[in-house]
Length: 269
Image (cartoon, rainbow, N blue to C red):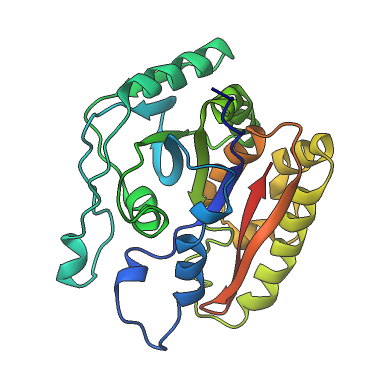
């Protein structure tokens, strides 16, 4: 049998809470993002055998991988309509692959833990309900490291790069702009634009330059307005996705104006 084609890595926006499963005013607020997520599988070179998601909603003292065989859902959003707390996503976990993830990280000098009890937070199941609505692809989640060190997350991605040749799709799930006070405020439109322009240029730079720039992301124009101090957990999944494609080209694959701010997605081949 021929080897499976190498999977790219992705950094995707997961929206706000259960946003794709609600009515919004103004109508259509999240429609373009939802359509983008629904079309993602069709852009891949092959159907992934598993999806590894790094979500901005799980921080742990060390990198930790979920190894539950049948993970529950964590409805970690508040104040939304009752039906959004009954959403389901019955994909199965992948404990064996989780153990491999922990081993690869440890082998790269990044101590890693396994958690067989934790379920999937909304940074995992909300976008995947659109990406893989049949829930027929195994899914596992990797935490961020609580110190939010950008270089460590680039290094973690590099350690996990071999999984791509085994049919595993590595997905960073966050938001490229994540200042909660900025959403809906027109004054933050130019702020998000400047940071987004810098981020796109950094992603599209030669791989070595890209890694250096991303490691120093907080020095970018308006970086701390786009991601306030100690709130960059929605950007760090990008570092894992970029690190897992150490020699591959990066490019923007989606951008939209949402709640007065620019939000983008990126792919690394």
